[in-house]
Image 1 (cartoon, rainbow, N blue to C red):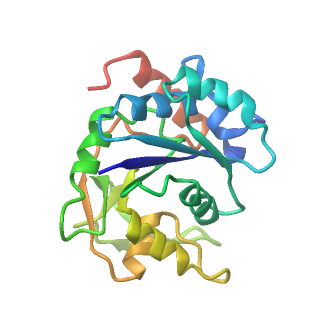
Image 2: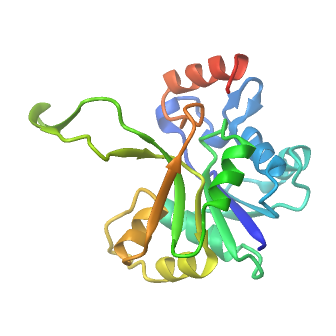
Image 3: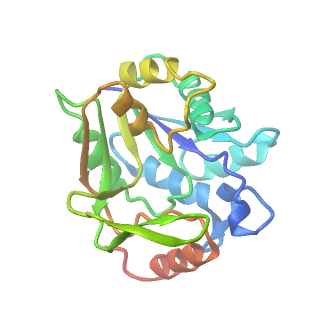
Length: 231
């Protein structure tokens, strides 16, 4: 089946403090976006790429970067004010013959082609969505955000931290995005939308190296991973 990857690269990256869109922050001398795009180019399961950019960004320099990453024909579109609206914009730009959609955060630059292919292959009959994740090992506390007071310890049994790419049948993702109301509570990922619609969601084992870049310390950690053994 034809599969398209949507790289969500519309984040401002304010918490990184670099003064530039997060996807263009450099890791090992290359933008995060380039690392992620190259991984999807190397994945055997992905046929097309759509990149969602921040509003108002000139797409021409990004097209040059994507060309050098193995995607001369990548589709670029402008994102919205929320992650949901950005994914919706990317979905509208996907080729109509795409039966499978993989949504990935460009802020996860060290995703491996093997993990991409394994996740796509895990979208089998009976499942509406699949994503990689890791079992939570830390003790979890529910905290009053105002006073930073611990309210209780959260049972971590069965709790996973979810990664991307998140993979969906095109029909499923179209349906759940069409149901989003402007006043709806924001979902932090697309799996949540499928869950709300009563769909069946599956998690498979992710990779420790598939880190998300949010803070400067994350970028420093990714630099160390890139310089060493990522297996």
